[in-house]
Length: 206
Length: 331
Image 1 (cartoon, each protein chain N blue to C red):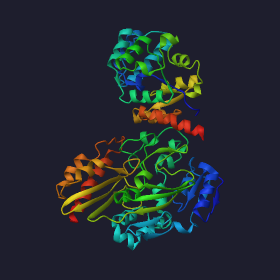
Image 2: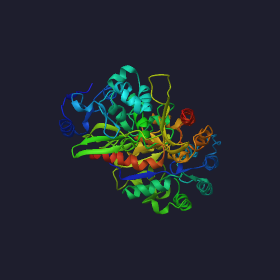
Image 3: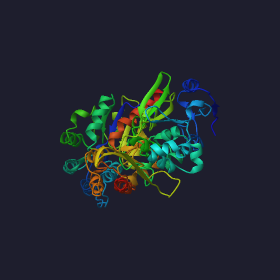
């Protein structure tokens, strides 16, 4: 792996635990899909993105999207990890298929605003899934960036744009399944991310 | 099989020169019970230039020093430690601990230095998975079967436990080590030697020894007056296995009061884990049957077990109660 210069974060599942219900409701409302029984906000979110992509739909229901943000529970290791990354000179970037309004609300609610270098949502990227990542990587070598994800769809998206996909191993059973999909790496907690980047840097220095 | 070169220096200085010349691809070869298996397991971090230190004369000894302590050469076999009358008389707990390391055959070959600096024995690493210690960027133990050989106290990238038994058993005696380096001798406590996973010369390891440094000696101060010590180890099988949890502890008793204490858990974390909360609790207390129950409630409050290894914490707490009861019974 090349030395890492930036980390792309998808808030859903990587910065916070999102509730599945608002995403399931959006899927039901826009695509008449029955609510899925999944308890994972991340899985419901990526399922919705797949439906949007298939239908060529550019928007979620804004009120429900904001409800998901309002009910999201920030992982406690996020602020210290972001501060440490910045101190190391690594750029934390939000690259998400959420709307810019939803992302801004999420960052504001959790007092994370000053901790990200850039923010790319689906509206300014002009699309979902790969589009925000492509926008984020416009002036950067993709092999020098990490994209954190806890979902199989996230791994596919990362592979499509050539960025190093790193698994957030929130759930050991799910992580064990996803590990078979050949991610570039995996971490148990965000507090390991700075060490991950240091190990890669040290290997490149030898 | 990789192409391996073996060097047989006759002095520590010569060994350091060879290690320095080959960088991180060189490694010290003594007993070989860890290193040769790392090679056999084809681990990415296994050295290919082996510097055999068995021909160096002054690394294999057990002798009493002028202050009543004992010095042990790093290349001393574990069986020699297990059979040493000097050590039995001064530090019976250490001898008891060494008797629980692997099998008699392996103790004949394994050295004290090798036991202190051995690589972790995670089944995923040894099974060739591309984990943090084997050229990859993931800990399979954190998401796989972590019942036996993984930390129940959290981790940093790699969640394997520090596997050695000698280090936990030496820490209660405030033992120290000497490292020969290109710039002279380094003197460290055993705790400083094995502080848990860290990045040394571009690789993750449990100890601080750099590629061109050699552990030469372990020194144990004279036993303090009133010192009592205990070691117990629980393992998946009755013999010949690594600790699922172990406890080495010492207390220094004056009259009936505990003046000082060392409580060191093995097998549950990425390093020998000193439980200073319990140590501080014990200081000033009177050794009694009730003490164990109180100490157990305070112990390991920061436990962070993985999916399958919470039982290690119960084992460790049980060992603490057992250890204190043993020391009380010896009253």
